[in-house]
Length: 129
Image (cartoon, rainbow, N blue to C red; front, side, top):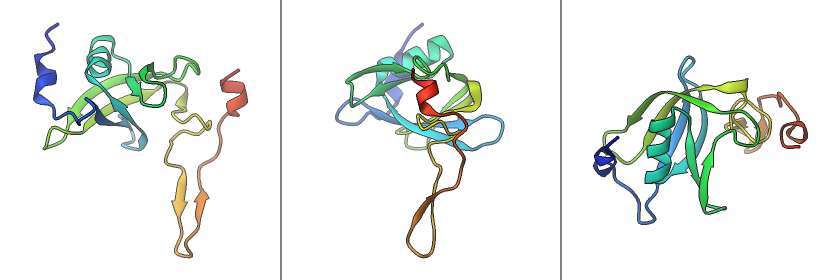
């Protein structure tokens, strides 16, 4: 498969592009991560989300440890070609390493505090044995 389509994207100085994972059915934003060219190419090729871990400096197949993979339904880009949107099916219903459905579980309140407003669905100790 040709990867010329990757040349149409605007990569940052480190060769990365932001990627948002959105539930294809509900529209809920589940997580944010980074991709490099290889990660996005592999995502398109395999039909499962592959990201680039900046902290580990390597590709990361979502769910490689937890089993909570992300099946790709659509890959889209924004109007500036500098953000990727993955419409996905979240296998196991958990996208966050904290054991929650979404990484965006903390809500800001008018009094200035942040509070977790989504439950832990599975203890991370059970996920990452």
